[in-house]
Image (cartoon, rainbow, N blue to C red; front, side):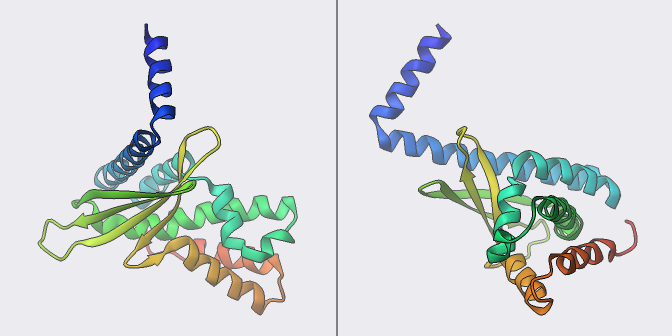
Length: 203
């Protein structure tokens, strides 16, 4: 019986593109809602920086396509990098995102994320949301850029906070480091290591 329902549902979606798109957008909004809920749970339950970092690392690996993000942030330099150096870069980038960006969210542990509309363009979906503060300060808009994978799943590609896309910001920063060092990937890897190691006291 369950198989019949699944087949019927797929047939209905294929027969009605509008219905399929609405379903995809609903799934995208649900994806962001779950992601935001998980992030807030981590922030509200993990009181130490090391605890937050460990949980955010798991969340990042589960919900984001780090390989695609790494390729994007390398830009044109990604065509010249060896597989070995790319693997090092991808790992360091993940550590960098967790340590630098995840810990910036610590001040939002008692806030609420309101998920708004979603817009699809080919394999990309942009989901709008906002952080509402308990202390009455003005909300902050956050947009989530999701990608539809070949297996039909959604993954996180980028986040825009206060009008700035995080991956794009890092792509520009990394391009600057590489240009200033004649395209030497080792200089970028060392830059990332320095950013990761430079951190405030544990909290």
